[in-house]
Length: 143
Image 1 (cartoon, one colour):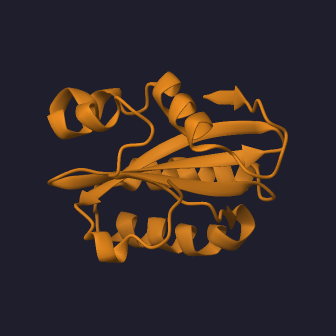
Image 2 (cartoon, one colour):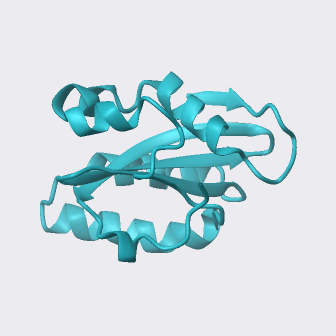
Image 3 (tube, rainbow, N blue to C red):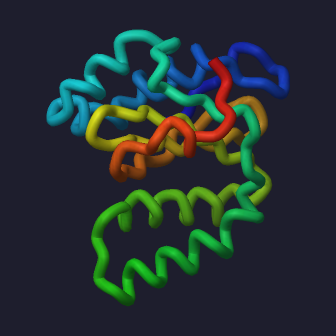
């Protein structure tokens, strides 16, 4: 899903990320199964939502993600396979885009929503899931 950014500056606000993610409905299947995630999606400034200010350049992520996808396929690992495939496809289509991560860190697992910025448009790409991330390992995020 594609969203026009209101502010045409370098920085995307947390509210813009949050609004785009919710409007895309990408988290809906997870919200239905995880009441903790449902709680996190009520407000953009929840302490367990981590917005990472520094994006990655898509073409720099591409080779590593392609290798990861190949390993997942070779080992017949389905966890996050479709999400990784969507991300690789987006990167191939938009190699000069910027890739952002917004992590919803719930009690039992996390949901990492990957977004891409192509000029003044924000694309909500996929969700990668895993166990809860200890706060000390989350790194710097903006609140």
